[in-house]
Amino acid sequence: MPRNPKAMRLIAAAGLTMAASGCMMQQTPRAVEQLPLAPAAQTKELAELKDALDGRTPMTAILAGGPKTEQIVPLKGMGYAQVAGQPGKTTNEKRLMAIRAARLEAMRDLAEQIHGLHISSTSTVNDMVLRSDYIRGVVEGQIRGARTTAINPKSADTFEVVLTLDADVVRYIVRAAKKGL
Image (cartoon, rainbow, N blue to C red; front, side, top):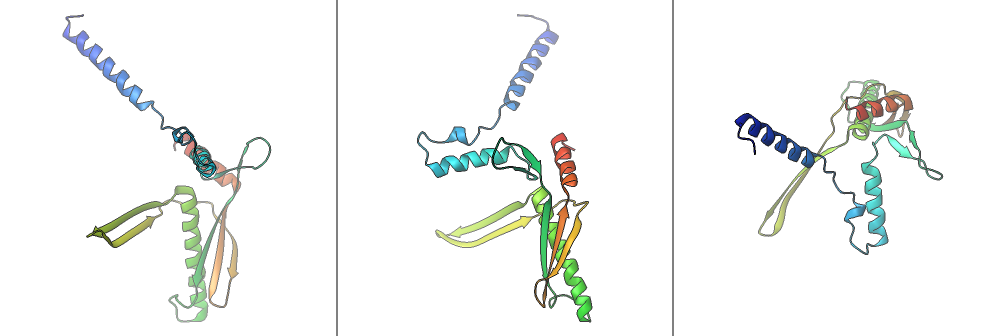
């Protein structure tokens, strides 16, 4: 055992570094590995699906049949808005505002597909009775390159807007996400 204090500190630091790196290298176990000995078919299928989804990004899809290959698919976001509830003096102003509101909702739909949805909830139980249950969903992110592919009047009072992110844009997003940009 070395009696030099510098050498002792160096050995201690090296030991702590190796211990910490060993902790960081642990991977979370796969769902299939956590199944009981004789799982139901539905439980096993659900665990396999979870493992498959954990290994994928939201923008890729597995083609059915043949060998598993990944294909980047375009993403579509849809939004709806009513004309009557919009501010404006004339019917045409209200229609334009409804189309704008539907477009923003379609953007939110795309952002949810790309960035995900953050859910927070609070439940209050008093005397073993549920008194209140509050659930909040938040979508946050930037959408660039979305094209308006359709503006459809669904009824006399409702508009639908469809936005699309082309496969090339989605491929760029996937590449950037994999690089950690």
